[in-house]
Image 1 (cartoon, rainbow over the protein chains, first blue to last red):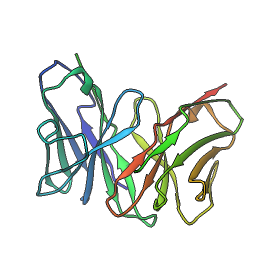
Image 2 (image 1 turned 90 degrees about the vertical axis):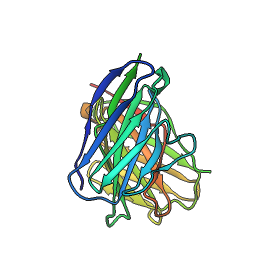
Image 3 (image 1 turned 120 degrees about the horizontal axis):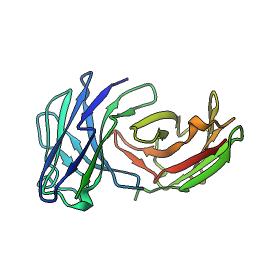
Length: 116
Length: 111
């Protein structure tokens, strides 16, 4: 298993500002992802955080808006840039671990952002 | 494309069985998962089933998979108030580690 710590756990932000969310894992993992969960919605994958190279973004998400860092195999950051109220969401870090089931995703507790 | 659908809400009485349903579209899905999200918390893996299985039982949880109809269900026996949460089904294909999630089913358990 993997234990994931995210911070901040919640924040209230002003429109136009940026916020960086940190994700720390207690073990080295290859696959690390960032998801967004908008109010009342399911999880949507933002990007795959690649260690030592640029993140791989899903359709509808761009690096300028959601820059991601992955300096090593245990840590990643997601920045939500130039925030607007539409960015109010829970942002979740997850890691993929290969298991006998083929793979399992572990999630952090999430960072709940409210943009005013 | 990939799409996972769930009903949004289910209400049961304590002690009854709960059945949460999910349909998916990608026939190449290899693993199907059920995650639980309690209020204010992250997601917790409940159980999973490999696509060549029809059924998997794990204590109070029973997962049924109808691959022909691309239908997945989660049955919770003797539902307790602590089971109140949002339940997400998710499908996994390929080797990317990415999961496609359904919208989540909110389970309300009445005492």
